[in-house]
Length: 302
Ligand code: HEM
Image (tube, rainbow, N blue to C red):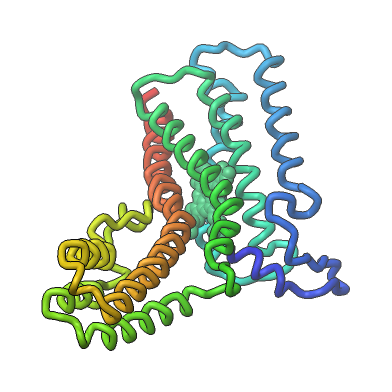
């Protein structure tokens, strides 16, 4: 995550009182868990107010506490949205991106309490509940993002390691290119039928595939897999055709398949790290639209 790398480059303690951060501190526990503590305190205080302040439960949103919760919620949503702008500006120190992300995550979770209490649990088929639902979708997608940031980097590095050590994405691409060159050479002595099978594997773009292929890592129309199967079936029907050139091509296709599987696992994991943002960000904008409609309707038509 960008936040970790920025923090690793943050300056040491200076006369300004800014504190150097270590590159290993997670944004979840940033500054000794400052933001989860603030958020938990705020959530408990608001729940206590909701329980102990005697207010009518009907149209609770338009009571003084309801308005207060609504104002806090709307301002929080606008501030949380600004993370998109903040991510693209570099300013180290107390308001580093890690600090922002920490506050974003914990205050974003606190919004469940703020927004839900603001509704007074009076949900129905209207624009107010639409705004609440969109808010919950954004928050849940954020939680999914956190779970993915916790799990995926480990899976990515496990996929990069094998008996010979670690391999980068660039090296995976180079290994595939090298196997293709070897396959091209090895296919020269083959008959037309088998050479065409190798050709279909060579013509395959290892990056081709739709969103579903990318997210699942499944490529049912993989030309290399089809070529390996067809080559082996052909050999089973015509055992006398078998020989050293075919053995070599078979072995190379198997190695290529292994590298392709590894590359596709790598792309699948990387796509997971991005996929949740395709819910988080567009639904944020839908939320802001619904929130605006909610506020306008409350002030003009209530
Ligand atoms: C209504 C509440 C929320 C809103 C409006 C909101 C909005 C946003 C926006 C606009 C971004 C920037 C995306 C980008 O430009 O790449 C973002 C990023 C993010 N959000 Fe939220 N968010 C909310 C709640 C949450 C919650 C509750 C969590 C976690 C539990 C969360 C976790 C994240 C994370 C991890 C990022 C990415 C940070 C990074 O890549 O450095 N968000 N959010």
